[in-house]
Structures are given as structure tokens and as C-alpha cells.
Length: 265
Ligand SMILES: C[S@@+](CC[C@H](N)C(=O)[O-])C[C@H]1O[C@@H](n2cnc3c(N)ncnc32)[C@H](O)[C@@H]1O
Image (cartoon, rainbow, N blue to C red; front, side, top):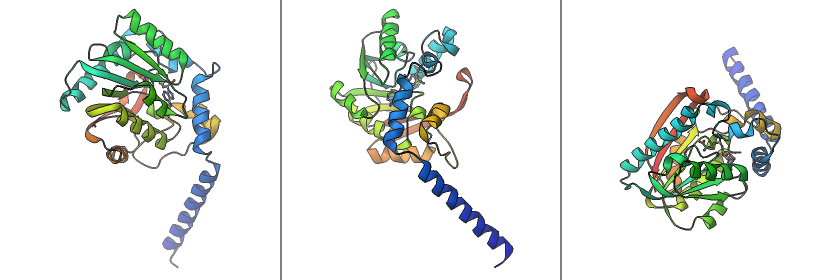
């Protein structure tokens, strides 16, 4: 065997071995879901209010950042609605992972009612508080357990025109979990309704996460997708992808590699 061929086979064998070890060390999905739920409900989690994007906390001490990001998301949602010919103000918007209400207060002019879904009860209370403080319409809180996102279907019985999520898919326990939420989103929308969903994208080999400590260390970019992979998975659910907007650098929060998918049911 020639030396190049030999080295190639050696490298391949090593790669397979690494993949095998990673697979064995990877906890089952159920455990990862429980780890994520615990993380977002643990008062010991470092800077919990900041990472749930509460007004006045961390980078949101600067109110212009908090209001500015919400406003930008509203403009993006307006554009997606216009592409899909959804008339505004729309009948109902669901935000998955609403946090402290940065988007909720911005969306009141384009849709009512606003349904905020979250796993953290304090964030839902804070979201309502901010909507009231800004006289920003009706906020209906929907608290779910991370292991049963489908429960939202029982709380939101009217089909909605809009479904939105930002800075949440990256903290999901697995990529499959994100697609499970997309299926719920599809069910919540009326035919012709629009989803605008932000995910973290990657273009190469995915880093392998694992275990509770790994989630705590890496929650902010725990889950990512390839652009074409997410597009096709959404098609598989029944969505008609319209376009994708890339935000490779996000200076306000010092983050990177975001993609917003605009999808029509
Ligand atoms: C980084 S904050 C983003 C808040 C808001 N979307 C924004 O853009 O300002 C993430 C939020 O997602 C919530 N969250 C985490 N896992 C969730 C899940 N499985 N389902 C719904 N919400 C979740 C957290 O409690 C937290 O409020």
C-alpha cells in the first residue's frame, strides 16, 4: 500500500473512533431536555435575567439595545408578512421563548393577541409587566415544560397569522428538538400564515455537545443548523420556505452566525 493511501486509511479509522466515542458519551435526548429545562429555571444560573433578555439587565441596561432589537424584529416580521401577503395588523402572533418581552412590546402594532411561550414563569410575568408598562396590547402567557412543547397547542386554540422566535433555537437541547418546535409552530399557524425563526447556523462539521455541564458551558450556541438542512427540514414539515436573511455578525450582543428563515404555511 502506498504511504498516502495508508495515512488516509489511518486518519479515517481515527475519525471513526472519535465519532464512536462521542456517540457513546452523548446523553440521551431526554436527559438533555431535562438539563436545559433545569438550566432555564435554576436561580443559580449565572446572570439568568440578562440571558433571558430582561430590560435593564446586562447589555439591555442600554434601553436603545432592548427597544432597538425588538423594533428590528418587528420590521423583519412586517417584511415576511408582506412577502406572504398576510394583512397587518394580523390575527395573533406566537413568540416561542419570549424572555423579558423585548419583542412582545414591539409586536403590539402588528398583531393581536400576542402569545408568549416560555419555560420560565418569571420571564412570562416580566413579559406581561413590560407589555403593560408600554401599553402594548394583550399578552397571553403560555408556560410549558421543555419536555412537552406540544402542550402549547392546548393553550392556543385559535390559529394564528404569525409565529416568531429569536435567540431561542440556539439554546434548544438538540437540533431535532428545534424541528419538533417547528412542527408545533406549523400547527399553530393558519394556512397562509408566516413563521420567522432565527437559528444559529454553521457551515461545516457540527461540534458535539453532551451532558449537563456541557450545556451550562455552551448554552448560547448549543444547537446550530446548516442553512440548507434547516430549509429542507422545514419543507419536510410542510412549510414553504420564502427566503433566509443572514446576520453573520451581531454587534449589540457580541454574537455571530444567525440566520432568519421566513416560511409560509
Ligand atoms: C436568550 S432568551 C431570548 C428571549 C427573547 N426571545 C428575545 O429575543 O429577547 C431565551 C428564552 O428562551 C426560553 N427557553 C429556553 N428553552 C425553551 C424551550 N424549550 N421552550 C420555550 N422557551 C424556552 C428561556 O427561558 C428564555 O426566556
